[in-house]
Image (cartoon, helix red, strand yellow):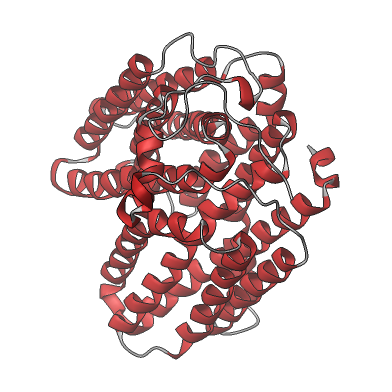
Length: 432
């Protein structure tokens, strides 16, 4: 994978992603401490509301941003969103009311909802070769996993030296550095998408969703995203309940369990380029991963119903590792399917639609997990999540014909069925 970093443009974009993620990780820790200062015992309610605002911003803003990306320079859009995020981060230490936190979080996450899919759509233009793009997807997955593991450690180290308010300054520095790195390179200029419906704004905003839902493998990808959200929500929402409550383990075992989840994801992200180079198809890999997610959840549901025993702790670590690995096997190659199924000018719209709809799956899974766990217990909640993952996996298998993208192919040669694009091979991408 280091070979892909020889591309100067991609190297700068990847570095921008890394520093922005570090800044986001610092903000996550600082936001929790700020919420406690403002709300005391009600801090969890503040953070829960902030997470809900985050998901709603992702679901609603991303399609709007995709329409905007067609009218402005991608580089200008990325830099502007980074600067907005930096400005919000610098403002957060000065808030004195909970409602101010909600407003600033809305601005911050709206900017992220515009930045992330535009960034994701730019990478395949920078790296048109699928071999290189696959490695870029793995690096991106690794960056997200490392951020979740290392940012809390970095935050803890900084908090031993400065007050938590300074973490927001670190966040702003990360976003400013990201903006500077994006400014330092020239980005490809994709061919504009063909206007649909006379260019009416509503049709333009929804075009990415219509393209995504018109393509069998992308509909299957969305169903698999639902399975990933079901399994991921169990890990992210219920780990502390299972470790501290059900198993009676010490608090220090909570990060160990989350670390097992991250380690599984990272291991698969590292191995995927070699696996896909050996002619393992995306369909086989991703549908198998959906089955593994369902099986892991079912095993957890059975184990919780039987009650904890001496085997419970190592079993939980193994299940979390497996869920992280299978989730990565779905999320990492997903960009390849989007790249193959859309023309250059449609990439921002399709990436934004996937970003929005994926977070809609998480918006369903997060509160469902928390509500069921509180009212019916972890075993029943895990059983419901198993059913959700099973439904997503079976739907993906039925939606994704075995002949579609059966072998890795060049993007220009993959058949597609979009109402807004001419039938036949995709047009070649243009670069500026």
